[in-house]
Amino acid sequence: MCKFAKFLLKLLAVGLVLNVGLFCVFFFDLDGKLLFNVVEPFLKKHYDDMERKDTLQAPYDMNKYPKYEYDT
Amino acid sequence: MAKKDIKKALKDFWFGKPHTAEEGGRRLGEILEDKTGLYKHREWRGVKDTMYYFYMIWLYNYIMMVKDLMVMGGVVNFAKGVWRYRWVGQTYLPVLHWFDRGLQGLRGEALKGSAWHYRAMVSSTIRQFQRMFASDTRLHGGKQNELYKHNIAHNETVWGGVFYPWDGVIQNVPLEMIPYFVTCHVNSHTVLNYIDAVQSIGLPGDPCPMCQAEAGIFVLDDVPDYAPAVITCNEACDASVSTSTLQDWFLDKPLFSLPMPMIFDDPLVKKYCMREIEELWKFIEEQYGIPFSWEKLVHKLEQQNELQRFEWEKWEVAAKTSSYPINGVAQALYRIYQTQYGDWEIWHKVDGKVRKIMEKCVTKKINTFPQTRHRVIAWSCAPLYYSNWCTWAYNCWGLNVVINMDSLMFDMTLRTDSYEHTLEDMAQYHMWAPMRRMAVGGMKHMFELWEYMEKFNCDMVAMYDQLQCKGVQGLHGLFEDEFRDRNVPAFWIPHALPDSRTVSRAEIRRQINDYMTTVMHEEPLDPSLLDFDDSMTW
Image (cartoon, rainbow over all chains, first blue to last red; front, side):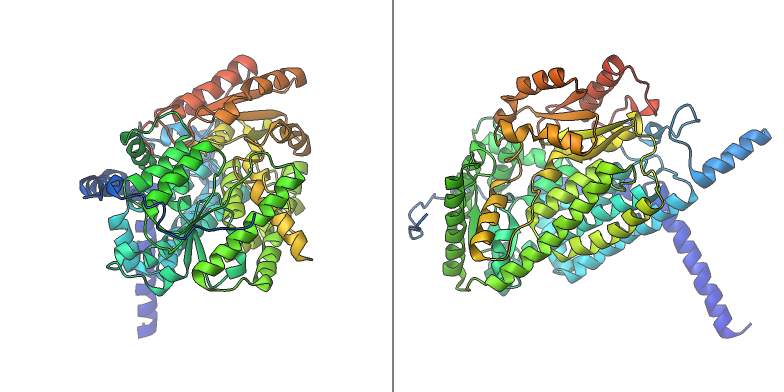
């Protein structure tokens, strides 16, 4: 068998395995299960623990910007 | 196994199981995991449709999302954004499940047409948050880069069209469309953090939860700093005015307030509104030093008109045939997203795809929703956490939501033949804001329901009942009287817009089930969908 045919066969085999693998992820909702059970809880914990600025401490500078006098 | 059983199994494998219980039934409720709503396995729709879903929806959209992220701002900015902002990390990673929930049970052309609408919304969402992250001073060491200097922030109900004169020079990015509105549809848990945050600082819990959530994002300091100036509006009600006050406080930027008149049928009010838009343009020119371009405005409005003309073609098909290939949730979300955000390339691309699908359906007279028992029009504002209720309603009861109020709000093209006409139409468009024209815009507009019901050949009404909207609450009794007088079958869907804790999805389904059994005396098409627990689902 020529080199090119072998390469093609290999490519086909890899493509097939990849397709079957991805189809299993799709069909059994493995992406959803991973995101729901692992990724989201991890990120939620990260966001819950995050230090946040106390926005209420910011002054409300009502006169900081020029007064817009528009003709309406 | 008997020969007959083998034949049926092979038929089910090749074509997918039939819809109804009498024919053997696909029992979609049984493929869901209890509480989480995850799938034990995704639906087998027959070889052709399953492969279409796998390659052209699931895989294609994952690939296109990565492509969009790379082209629009890059993966590094995305990763930084995910790490910094809850609303993106918690919400948008499981976006393919949003597709699953909206497209459940669909087959053939309806599956294809509806999925393209989702693709456009995802692309537009990525475009917006990537622009935020690429410009965000918080993600770039406090630096105001060039993108920052060419962005303008605005409330999500300020129509993107008012910024058309600066197309390609100043990019408008709504403050809440992606951090709030779209999150509720994709992952309904995220928004609860923001509602609780605003109540934790002492604000009352009874105003509209949309306004609460939009303010809560600011209270939790979860808004990117991506633009030098901001445009606010009173959206649909007084609660939104309070939100704008809080936003003015927390943003601390030059701000222009573009009001939406509550009573807008008065020509004098329209004149006032036209002047307001002109003043907004003056504000932008002053802040950015970039002049208004009439040519750009006309060009973009023409583009938007093209989208509207195709929408009218879609409505014709939806109204007069049973070949409309878009389901209720895709119709509603795509249309409100497109009309509010304004013209953008992806809408045209997707409309081109949908046109081909729709033309095929019409030419071949394909019945896209063959189990339709009732043609439903959905009226008032929908529950954001359960916008896919209509997918469930079709699968379970054969209730086909043909059209909805949100789709019909901006039923107009805009004239571009003179400055005066253009401004007049833009004022009209601006005044017909979401939740304004037909939800709190007075009885005349709320009762446009009857006209559209006839136009779309509907025989049933799904009436949304936003429990925390004082405007809609005031008209509840009037609608009840009208339904009785006109002998129109109608069921109510109580909800609290983004807050899934007030009325659960299960409670919404229970109310529809009760109506269909006790009033309509009908049997479900798929009994496995009558009662299931999805309390923890996205």
